Amino acid sequence: MNNFLKLLFSGAVLLLTACTTDSGESSVVDDFDASVVCPAEGTNAYGMPNRGTFVDERDGQEYKYTTIGEQVWMAENLNYNAVGSICQGKDESKCELYGRLYRYTWQDRNTGRDTINWDFIDSVCPPGWHLPKLAEWEKLASYVGGMDSEIAASRLKSVDGWENSNWGAGVNVCGFSVLPSGYFSYESSYEGHCGFFLSSTADYENVNNRIIFCMLMEFDSVIGSYNIRCIKD
Image (cartoon, rainbow, N blue to C red; front, side):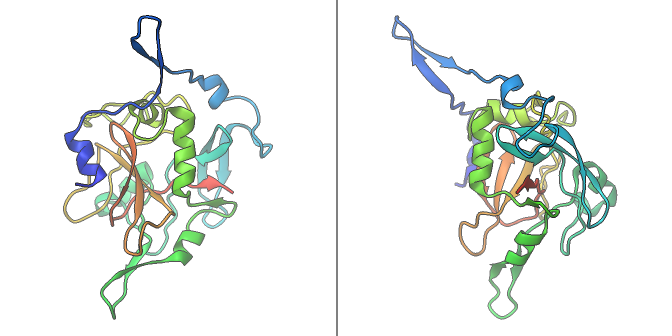
């Protein structure tokens, strides 16, 4: 059973630092402070305002960004019309809401196997930004509560748009604004329930690696088309 199925059939696993009281009872310690981890005001290490906008010079689209810890992330999903990208449900209006869905595998006609398109990975994000590695996603998670963490997912999920989700809305304290855009396959989409994002880290040659936001923030490996959040170089 892969991680996503485990997610559907298991309860939340909240991984936070624990301490022991004098009575021997364990209590959860969470010293997260948004004013320290992801302040809305001030300037980041790149000399940019902590939150703002930038323009993709390839097509003129403007994107929000946010600073979390030492990282600068797009605060909305990539909507660049790359070859092979699609809108959720093949509905063009969904691209305005969710951005486009992408995959970095293609099928070799000679072998029938899926092969990673490294040129796509290197070029899909705007100049000065890149498709995040798994380690960069894990670092983001460490700032807000950790992987496999319900509280990390909540801090990065948007307040609105999760009305149909069994896992509820977020508090969006860092302005990351994850929407339940789902993914694209011919079997199901989970639109309205979960958000899925590509990682550039390849597990093996025929798999897209993704980060999932439902109840938890966790990692899985499944072929499909997913959203992209770029991170600054």
